[in-house]
Image 1 (cartoon, rainbow, N blue to C red):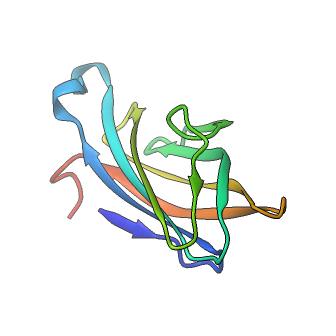
Image 2: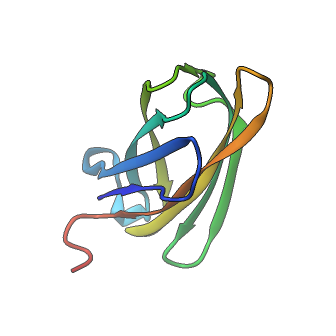
Length: 129
C-alpha cells in the first residue's frame, strides 16, 4: 500500500508498507511490518529533518506514540528538488493497524515547519479485501 500526504507543505511524504512474515510470530501476537518512506523537497531551499512523530494504532485501538530526533539515526539535509528515502519498521499485536504523524524540519533560513504524514495502513496480506 502506498499513501502520500496531500496537505500543503513544501515537503511531501509518501509511504509504502510491507508485512515481514519471516520475523512475525502470529501465534504470539507479534506482527512485524516494514515501511519505506520517500521525502521530497518541493521548496526552493534546503531543509534539515530534525525530528519525527508517529502515532501507531493497532486493531484493538491500542495507541503508541513515538517521537525522536531524525530518522534511522540521521538528520538528513534535503536540497531543493531532492528526495530522501529510508526504511524502518513497526511491530503490532494485531495483523492490521495504522500509522500517521509528521516530521519537523528547518529550512536554511532557520524557520521550522512540519511535513504531515497521512494515515497509512499496516496489514498482513489477504487480511483485508
